[in-house]
Every structure is written in C-alpha cells, then in structure tokens.
Length: 129
Image (cartoon, rainbow, N blue to C red; front, side, top):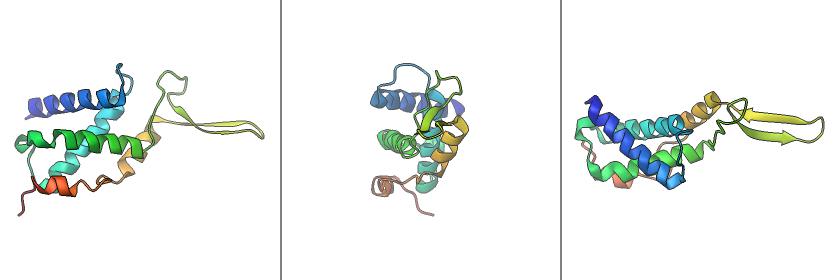
C-alpha cells in the first residue's frame, strides 16, 4: 500500500512540477503537501481506499493540488535567508514582511479543496454507502 501511495505521489509531483515549470527540488515539500491534500480530499469524497485509486483521477488530483498551491498564494523562495518570500513591503518607516513555510502550509490547509467544482469529475468515481 505504501509503495502504491509513494509511486502515486511521485508521479503526481512530476506532473505538477512540469505544469509549474520547476526543475529543481526546492518546492517539493510544498508540492507534496498540496498533492497529499488533494489525494486525501479525493479519497474521502469518493469513499475510496488508496488501493482503489483509478488512474482517471491522476490529472484531477494534479489540478486540485495546483489549485491548493495557487490559492494559498504560496511561492516560497528557499534561497532567501529567512526561508520565505516577501509578503509585503512598506515605504514609510521601511518594513518588510516575509512568509514562513509554516504560514504557507497553514494557508494551503485552509484553502477550499473543491475550488473549481471538481465534484462533477469526482462523482464518476464516487462510491455511495
């Protein structure tokens, strides 16, 4: 079971990175969080076990993960000293506010999981009862 889940996450991560044109591994932990959130949401909504995962949901999971990531407005710059990207910059009395990874995860977790009404696509695979 863990091998299947790991393989699924690796494949979805590869596709998500292609969509975002990311070639390095700097955002993998955030992408994986978005992917895992999408997988859990899909499994819960469809009443499926991970071993019942239909290949037809792969693209939907990638798109949901992309939406989770984008809705949270997450784009962490891991090369910066503080590990976060600038959220705001003030001019008077100069002030810079950065986003930490923890804030990024929190925002992503709070984002609505069915943002683009994926229910129509998921209903095809949903088991009732």
